[in-house]
Image 1: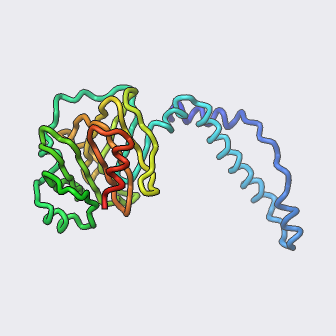
Image 2 (image 1 turned 180 degrees about the horizontal axis):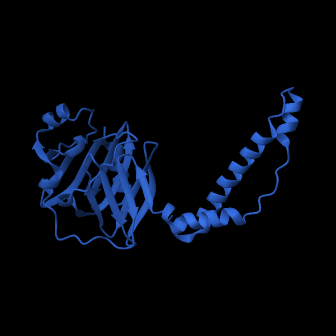
Image 3 (image 1 turned 90 degrees about the vertical axis):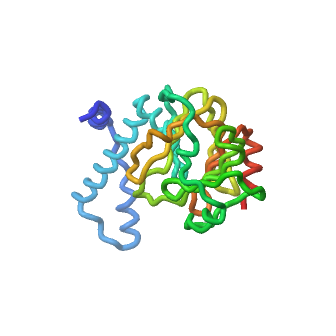
Length: 240
């Protein structure tokens, strides 16, 4: 049993939960329904007290309370707020990370979903793992903008990508056409791709710049570049 579980049990035993007023009995009497058996009512109250004790215990432990704020999920992306970033050996070979280079026509055909696009055609289009489509503006060694789109994942499927943000990275909540979004800015954060089993792909580990990520029309969309929040939102609004 973990230390947190031991604390939960200990606190649950110490809590003095007052007997609640018997409102249910009065309501049932008014509508002519027989009062539930005493044993069942005591069981319901005991379970309610146990749940309350567990919740209070979690909120009373600073480490557990702070852990609740360390994970942000949006679409197929998971953002983890960490104390220290893992060491990144060097800049990743972007073309290896993004996947197979294809034409825009091929990407539209093979993606399996309608792509959101800017008016300007990308300089490179890539089809990666988990049917992720990447639009690259610039060159692989001099990227101006990256736009990625991944089809939605089911609740029982692992995330597509993981972001690790330390103290120097700011995470702001935003909105794109009414959909919740997060904007990561400041110090570069670490991004890595996950395979279909949820395992990290070490070759995809790299530092990322300012990023806006959101979920829209069943896909996770991500803009990456040297952007302010206003610039990122303007670009996001221009996708169609």
